Length: 77
Figure (cartoon, rainbow, N blue to C red):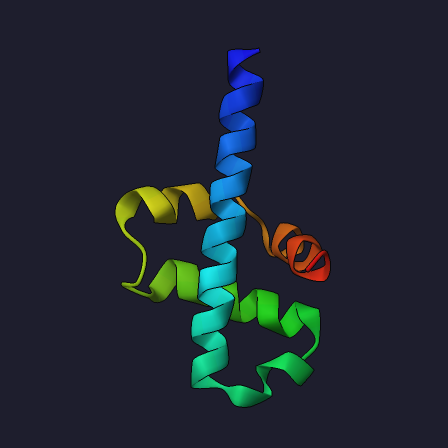
């Protein structure tokens, strides 16, 4: 039960961070909206691994998501 609540909380945090990262990418590239989801997911994955925009805890949380996971989350929004 407690593990389920922690997972839900982590998933919510991941969604918020993903939204923030996509917004940042969108500010840098106004054409991002028109890019395929797979391309956006690769850009987000690169940002997670290479950018200093995330602290260590956020990076660890987001590192659990594969590129495919990111694609699925992006397609839901």
